Length: 88
View: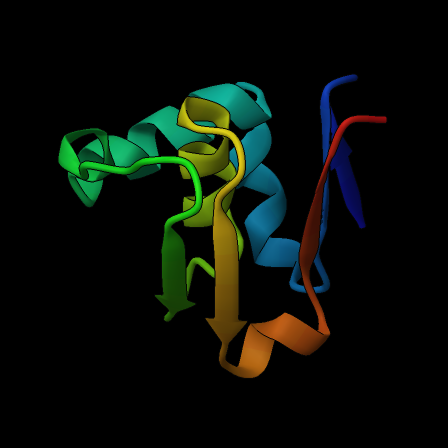
C-alpha cells in the first residue's frame, strides 16, 4: 500500500497503518513529532539520526523536512517492509 500526497510517498505493508495518513502525510508526521517531542530536537546539517522502533522512517522524514543533509540509520523489523520517499 502507498500513501502519496504529491510531495512524499510512504510504502507500508500493514493495513492498519492506512488510517494514519487519512488527514495527509504531513499532518501525521506533525502529530508524531508532537508525541515524541521531535520539534524540540536540536539538529544541524551533517548530523546522524538513529531510528529504531515502531515508527521507522517516519521520524527521520519529519526531521529531514526541518534540516537538509541529515544522515539516517534505521533498524528494526519494519525496515524491510516500509520506506518513505521524499519527492515524487
